[in-house]
Image 1 (tube, rainbow, N blue to C red):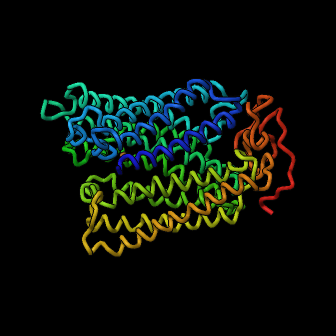
Image 2: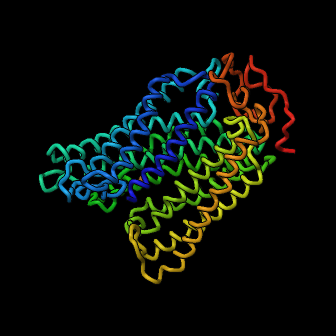
Image 3: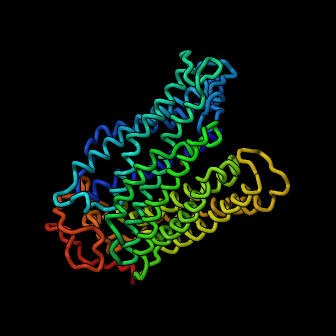
Length: 484
Ligand SMILES: [Cu+2]
C-alpha cells in the first residue's frame, strides 16, 4: 500500500510542477503555445492511465505490489500467489508508461525553449524559471530511458521468463539498483530545479532588486543537470560497492553543493538590502529557502561514506528527504501557486489566510521532520510499525507536527476556493513584476499574445527604466495596490 501512496503523492507534486511549466514557459518566452500541442496532449492523457493502473494494482487477483517504491529484486521478483496479473506487474507497467509520457513531455519542453522564443530573447535573456525547466527536462531526456528500461526488464523477468535481475538464474539484482538510481537520484533535481527557478522569479519581485548574478545562476542550473548524472552510486554505498567507487561518488556528490551554493548566495544577495515585501509568496519562498539550506547541509553529511553507512536506513535519511521534498519543494510550490494565482484565475487571494497557511505549514514542517534527525542518529530504523520506548519523545513531537501540517492545508483550500469564486478582480500585473507573462491580461487570452513581443532588455530590470519589450506596453497602474 505504502509504495503506491508514495508514488501518488510524488506524482501529484510532479504533475503540478509540469502543469506550471506547461502554463508558464510559453508565456515567459513569448510563445502562443508549446511546440507540439498534440504530443503534449498524448503525454498528458497517459497520466490518468498511469493513475488508474496504480490504483487498480490494489485489486488485481495477484494482490498489491509489495516491494517498496524502488521495487528492488529479488523482493520484487517474488510472486507469492502465482498469478500472472499481480500488483507488482501492474505497478511496473504504470512506471514504464509514465516514463514514456515524461520523455514525450521533455522532448516538447526542450524543443519549445530552443525554437519558440520571441524575437530578441536570447538564451541569456530567458527568465530563470525557463532555464531551470530547460535543465530539468534535459535530465529527463538522459535519465528516464534508464529507469524505463529497468522497469521493462523487470517486467520481462516477472512475465516472460527472462533472468536479467534474478540471482537464482544467473541474473544480477544490483544491476537493477543502477538502472533505478541512474534516474531516481537526478529525479530529485527534476523536481527541485523548477523550484529553484520559482525562487529566482519571486525574490527579485518582492525585494524590488534585479537578480544577483543572473548568468551564473542560469549556468548553475545546467551544471546541476550535468553533475546529477554522475552521483547515483551514493544510494549503493551498502550494496557491495567497491571502495574506490564509493570514494569517487562521494566526491561527485559533494560537488553538487557548488552550483547549489552559488544559487543560495545569489538569492541571499538579491534579498540583501532590498525593499522586502513579506507577502504570502515571499514568505513561502523564504521559508522554503531556509528549509533548503538545512536540507543541503544534511545532504553533504549524508554524501560522506562513513556517515552514510552509519545512518543508512534510519530516520536521519527520512528527515533529510522530507526537508528536500516537503520543506523545499512543496513550500516552493505553494509560493508559486500564490504568486501566479492572480495571473491564472484573474482573482486575488486573501492575504491573511495565505499568511496563516504559511505559518502553520512552516511550524508544522519543522515539528514533523526535524525530530527525525536525532531519532535517526540514535538508531531508529525506518519502515517499521513500532519503536522502542527510548524513541518516544521525538516521535510524539513529530506526530504533533504532522497533525499541524494536516490542518495547515485547510486555510489553503478555503482560500483557493473562496478567492477563485469571490476574490477581488486581479489586474494584469498586481505585483508590479517584470516579465512577459505580466504584460497580458489575467487570465491570459487563449493564445497568450495577440502580438508576439519583441524583447529588448534583460529580465529582472527592477529599479531600471528601459521597458522589457519594444512593442507591448506595460499595463497601466490599476486600482489594486498590493504594497500600499
Ligand atoms: Cu541521491
